[in-house]
Image 1 (cartoon, rainbow, N blue to C red):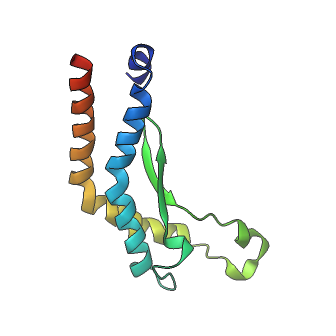
Image 2: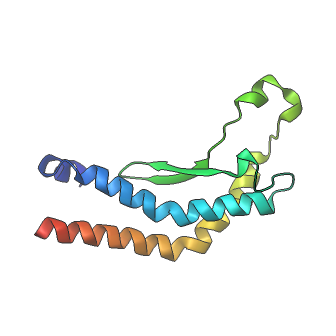
Length: 119
């Protein structure tokens, strides 16, 4: 769908990607808050509690901002279960809490683009 629209309107793919990332914003914010409050030794100020959105026109995701490059060099700061904790205690609950809102925003984005296409 995106490829077909992209041939007609060059801004379609960019607009769709931006609108879908915007729809994922409540999940990102909620996941960051939950990571800081639900995971031990990770306060709200921790760089590991920060989340980012990414993706393209077929998928949008929420992921931690920080990556574990330092833990490869320093064995003392490793947390091998951190990915599981982030997923189970922050990311999945954030998605469940905001599922309806994300669906509404994504639907609205597609409806707006359909309306723009028709005019």
